[in-house]
Image (cartoon, rainbow, N blue to C red):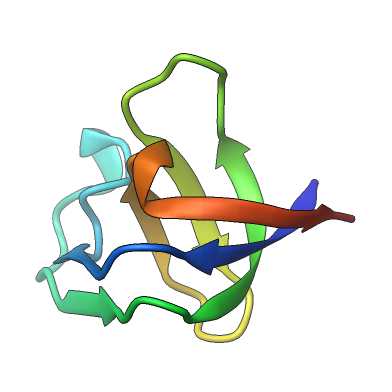
Length: 77
């Protein structure tokens, strides 16, 4: 499932933090998304009531996690 989302608050973290620990042995890189950025994302986990949602940015290929309070869903694909 794919969505289009808008980042509503600046969000940053480490790439790899959203990957299962079994696959978590590579060097981490930091990422950052500014407020207002619109992303097409593949949805991995976006359950109602969850503290964090996990997406892959389809433009850059980054898998990242973000709290639902920091983005808004624009459309589903």
